[in-house]
Image 1 (cartoon, rainbow, N blue to C red):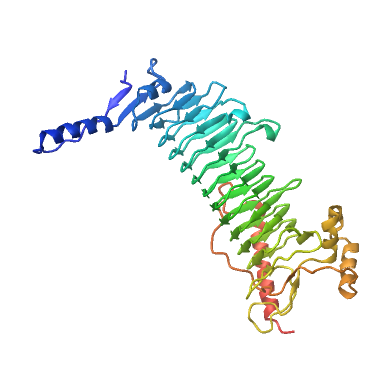
Image 2: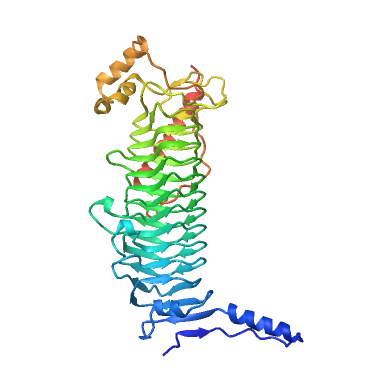
Length: 467
């Protein structure tokens, strides 16, 4: 039988002549700092993970070998809880399976399952109530919340797989990673599915979210009252919404994919009452609505591709002072729907606007900008903004006749949403989107990209052809 407490051998070397009082001081320091490995194995019947933690000191490693351990674990000292061979910690069905109450702990390499079911008690696979922890390479399943950060700052959550509890009502589930009233956390390389929201942040500032894969849930990423956050290189697909950004300021996101988010009131990215956001070089493809904005102010959309969506933009007139430039808007059923009379958003910058695949103007001087403005919103889409059911007739002969008549004899007094500097060639993308299901492009995106290249070729040919 292995001794559950193993001591690493001390380093050896030549003896040194040191004053006695220095020897005593060094001995006391070494005794307090010396890290031990406490081995927990299914073959050691008298030891549990919780018992090992109780005898551990700060800096020790609790090494858990393969097996099933039926217990809830509380880390109340700074230890590393490390799984060898994917051991399973099966909770008791009440409370959180692993609770971390002390700073600078590590939890890695474990399968964690069977938490309690009380939303109000934050029952989770892993509950953090401390700072500067690392939670990495764990698998969480059959848990209410996956990883819950409660007033917990500067933690690293990386490489975990989180599958929610398959409750029929999505409102009864918890989020995969839930952060409340916490600052400076990093979420990287996690896979989250079948939870309520993938990553939910409330009153959570200065967080970094990078390289996560989130699918088959409500909102892939959900900010509430959270400022100065950034997310990059994430993949959000098959959700109700890829990201929902609400009541937050200075959210910066780039190089993300928002794809196949479809259903009733589904969006690639949703903004509600936000300020000063920046969206750069994201791919927003095959969604019911690409970008939805209500009460969004002073934000910038630059270098994004919106392709194959039913509607590229749904913009409320309460969204003001936003700039859209150098975006590719390609093969969407409809480019824009304005809810309200008009907006004061700018659809072009000082030197360039956006590339619209249905722009039929010319570039006779060859400067890359169309010679005539692009009127984004036609009369039928204007009427549709007040009566959504009209979308059923979007491509009907009646809608086309109404648009043709409006061009010749304007009868509606309205502000026209216009890109005054439309691009005749698409903006080159400098990054490769993350793969879906291990493939470079999902089936739908694989169809969109060749069509996009074909449209680009036709546009270039048309722009260079003399009238």
